[in-house]
Structure formats: structure tokens, C-alpha cells
Length: 364
Image 1 (spheres, rainbow, N blue to C red):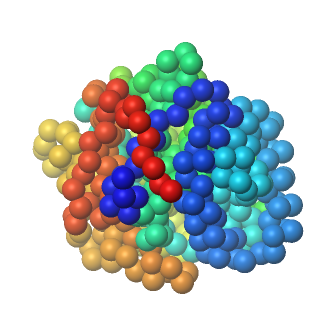
Image 2 (cartoon, one colour):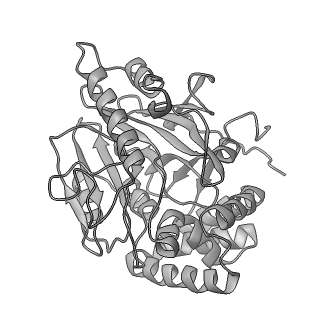
């Protein structure tokens, strides 16, 4: 398989350490590339001795949350021949940036839930090189529980769904952070390891989080909930039965509805996020049947130019940021529709959770 042309699909079995070892071995080169990109782009070329100190602090916090996830991170490090603290940093990459710099100055991602069809979907707007770095990973536990997720090399939890019918999407939010807690990517994995929507909600509520982000979670019974993380420690807000979509500003009344002095949102970023949010609302207000095609229509929307839902690449923070891929998850069929790059320019590939590959591609 050509990594730059195909969407790699990897299937891992065993315990968490074995998941990690296979992950690290298969994606050794991609993990090295990803870490190098983040060291410059998000970790701000901070000296390794300082990054090691921060990464080990995160590992300690991870251990309090889940020993199994630490075992998986250690397995990835072993397979990729890197240090566990480096894999910890990849799993907390945005939180580390907040910790080092204080705030983030770009937007990414539009997430939607179509409850009538049990479809959760989003654009992943990020740095252009990740078009050729993201992978599909299928985890299969000994008890038969399976996870299918789109993720980054070295990252154990991201956008995906499981055989229990749970699905999760992500938006990052603005804020300032000076604490080390559980990053959102570990929370996403904990959702995907859950057997019910109640269990997923409990896992999120009980975590000591230090992240400015939003998780939209749904299930195959067409139920959903939304968490906005905006404070230190017990910082989650649940509000079901409101808008089943999210961009990059706060929607809960108890947090920021508009920019304010206590936690400033860049005016341009707020405008961009609000315009995308209003465009989703406008499309969903039209009488129509909720289908995968409707999700494709929303994620491929190009109205509003530079504030479009489907984002063309533009230079931000010294990097090209735009829509890296579009992910649509059909919980009725347990299928993922995913584009490699901008969905207007590239076709969707369909990957069914029950049709995982029996052999592995060679990335050497």
C-alpha cells in the first residue's frame, strides 16, 4: 500500500500494551514525522529536557486515569523506539501548546449529529501534512469489543465509533491553561472503550480534565450529549437536547457566548466559528431526509468563502491549515465514510467495522 495515496487501515488485537506495540512498529516512521512537526508547530522548539519533564508529568496524570492507557502508550514507544513521554506529548499535543503558550489562535473542525439517521460527522481541519499521516485503526479486545477510529500516528483516541454503537467527534475551543490534566484524546478513547452512553458520560465526568475542547457523543439509539470543557479540573458542562452540532466557540450559557475580557476569544476566530455554526443551522432548517448524503453536503459546503465549513488551506501560525479529511459515521450500518483531503476534491472511502483487513500493509 502507498501511504501517500491510500488510507491505511490497521487492525490490532491483544491487550493494551500489545495494541501499542503493534501501533508503534507499524507507524514508526509516521510517529517520528508527526513528533517532528508538532515539536516545531505546537511545542515551540522547547528544549527536550523541558519537554521530557512535561511529558512525564502527563504520564503520571494518565496513570491516575487509566493504567491500561499508559501501558498502551509505553507499548507504542517500545514499538516506535522512542520515549514514552514523547508519545504522551502526542496524545496531549494541543493541551501542551496551551500549557506552553497560554492560548491557541486558530480554529479547527465542524461537527454535526443527525439524530434521525444516527449519523455523526465532522471535518478535521488541521495541518496539511496530516493528509498523508492519518490512519484508520481497528482495535479488537479479547471480549469482542471493537473500535474503528481515524487517528494520528501515536495517538490512542480520536474520531470514531465502536460495536456498542457509541460515536465521538471533537472540536477545540479557545482558552488559557496552566494545569496538567487528562487531555481530550484520552477522553475520546475512554468513550470508545465504553459499552453504553451512560458509561461514556460517567467516564468523562469523573476525569480530571485540563483541556479547552468539545466532545459530541452519540449512540445507535440516536441519543446524544455534548461536553464543553472550559475550566480547570471538574470543567465539564453537559447540555443534551440543544444544538446537535458544534464549531469552535462556546454554546453553553454558563460559559462564553461571546468574547469577553476574562478569557478572550480572537474576534476573527469567533466570527469564523459563528458563521460556520449558523451555516450548519441554516442547512438543517430545510425540510429534508437525514442521510449520509446530507452529511456530505454539510461537510462540503463552501459558502462564506474563508469562513466556509469546508476549509481551503491557508497560512496560519506558519503552517498550511485546512480540511485534512471528512469523517461520516453511520451507526446503523457501523460504517465510516472518509475522504483523504478536501471532500470536494476527493472521493469518500467506506470502511465497515465488520470488514476489517486480515493482513497488514507494509509501510517500510
